[in-house]
Each structure stands twice: as structure tokens, then as C-alpha cells.
Length: 174
Image (cartoon, rainbow, N blue to C red; front, side, top):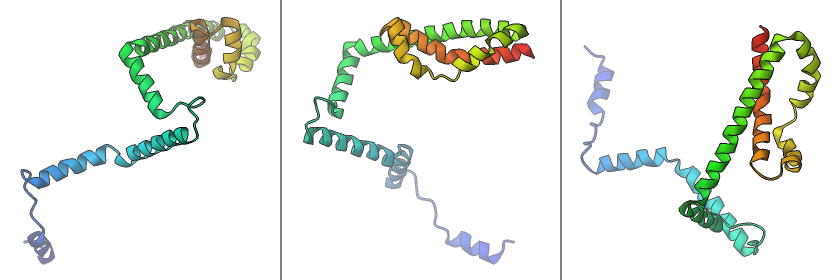
């Protein structure tokens, strides 16, 4: 037999509401509101509205694009097909840069990991170049390769080369 306090609580507990009435709709709306991060989206809308008002109020259209102009340009780029084409070009250059980094990193890593003399000869150069961020080389890459896909390939390959090279060399040396 159950304890009297537990029996009293069970008897006074409200029965669940039917899921076919208006409470079901309220429950679904409540779940949707909780899942969509309403406060976060409200913050985004408020900041966007504030930015739009600031650009219009201080007449900054010539130096700062208003959010409405940005969205209009995004829509035009998507509908005209220019934006997907540019995204494809960018992704293609990234994939090519990663492929260059993989080939160069694995080949050099295997060679450096296999021969101690090569490791001793190149360790100063590697430790000098490795900490330089790829973003810092963009001006130099623009001077050497110009503004285009070869410059993007170089920056991506440089950034991805060091982890591949170091991991391959260390793994091979074991």
C-alpha cells in the first residue's frame, strides 16, 4: 500500500489536458517559439533596424551600405546567377589550394620525416615560416600573383600546408 502523502498528491494532481483541443495548438506554438530562439532573432532585427536608421539618418550611403541595400544586392545576385557562379569560383580555388597543400605537405613531410639531415637543414626555415599567418601574406601574394585565383590558391595552400607537413613528418619519424 502506498504512503498516505503520496496517495493524496496523486489524487490532487491535475489530469493532463486533451491534445485535440486548443491546448494542443498552444503547446505546439510554445515549442516552436522555444526552438527558434526568438530573443536572438529579435536582437538581429533590432540591430539591423538600428544600422539602417543610422545609415539613413547620417547620410552614410556613399561609404556604408544600408542593410536594405545589402539584402537587395544579395537578392539580385542570387536571382541573376552571378552569386552562385562566384561562390563556385571561390570554392574551386579553395579546393585547389587544399590539394596543393596536401600534395606538398605529404611529400615534404615524408621526406623530412625519413631523413634526419633534411630535418636538421630545414627546421629553421620551417620554424620561421610556420607561425606567419596566411592573412599576413595576402599583400605579398597580391604583389606576386595579382588579384585572382592564383593568389587565393597560394594563401589557402600556405595556411593548410603547415599542419599537414608537421603531422606527416612527425608520424613518419616515429
